[in-house]
Picture 1 (cartoon, rainbow, N blue to C red):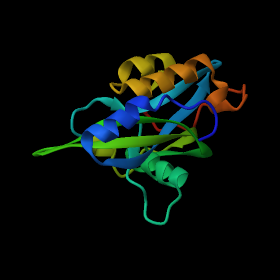
Picture 2 (spheres, one colour):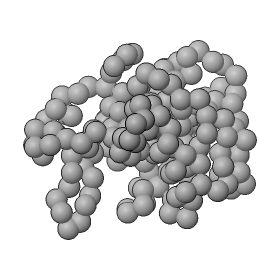
Picture 3 (cartoon, rainbow, N blue to C red):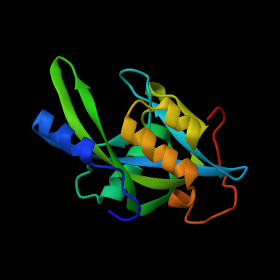
Length: 174
């Protein structure tokens, strides 16, 4: 992984405790608005918590492409995906009545260029823009919270130094 990596000791402990860790890929969808990074969060389908788009690897897709596919399906996002990951976080995927499954999500930055009004999971989720620092307070996963705080403190992690505001073509109510 390139750049500043998220601490992985929690991840390693998590994988050992559950026995098997499953890998997923996620997209940190972002834009610049009034000189600050904003992050697009979506609600989870089961609990309604705020999360980033994430999911299982796509057959024949590279990790970044899998993350981009999830961003489209869950949030209607189209944009420019970074090839290098920003970090990693872990969570326990609920699978009632089965026990939770330990998952590790590799996160890629995705600069949002367009938000579609119609997308596959539109009826199942809400989406909302938050400043990175507020997004960190909205998510439940500590390592994802840490990653969002790092992005707030150092926007160049996602922007690569871009200073121009990027208001994507946005569907009404997005």
